[in-house]
Image (cartoon, rainbow, N blue to C red; front, side, top):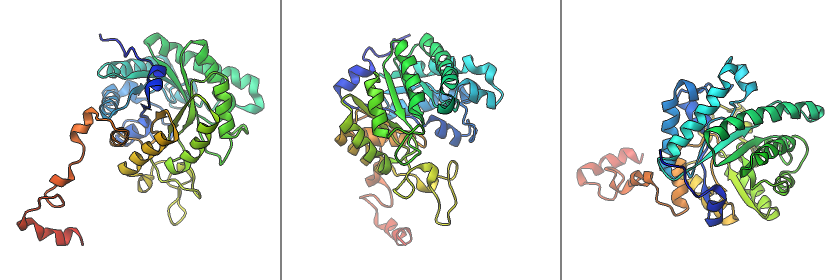
Length: 345
């Protein structure tokens, strides 16, 4: 079996922008393989071919990292759906599948840990022990199966993020640690997002930044401040939704009549592929090193982002060629032109 790429994450970042792709949980829910609500990645064991296919689609679209689908594959969440006994099997299988598809291209494999919902700053010592144990067992299996680095993501608390960072560093692996931004200006334990990123970098995180919650319009202004405060590598992985100042996160999006749309009625707020391409260009101009996408992401977005960064990827073979469309292309025949009256209204 071919080995994974010899060029690690830090080598790649030193050479230029790394394109990441997440959004596995939301995309697989849309395809009918994950239950909205608990969002536990049961698909890893129940429908592994569906996971393989999504990894492969992200790879063809230009993603340079296959992220093992172990988001919410920790003891607490599996207990919620009665599958705690599948904990080790699910974590190991997720990493194996990520490795399998990474070898089809030149991609890295990232182990993944996330917010546990167990951390409590009011009971810091006891809850920290619980969180640490969750991370240690997940990452012990990931390391055993083979990973290149670890992404610790969607951290609501700086305290929990620091635990993740410490566990990763004890394993001797590069660490990418990103924060969730559900609150206007601070983590749930009271640290400004920019300050929290700087603290993580000062504690040895190789890549710091933000993921999830905010769309490009409301994430990039914070990322710009992070870039100015941190000397190391910076990551941005927004959701592809049209957030705005009055509704800065996708959890806060509402229809005109005030109905909340998160998490399963978000479609009318989706960005276009062109808007996500613009985001990629803006992020690169700001000096973001790891440019990705989070919940709501799909392969068409990743391809658009890759091409916006000047790359031709395997899926570019099938990039749109609207000039060849029989009705709105550049060579519409006379006999079809009458249809344009109805098409254009």
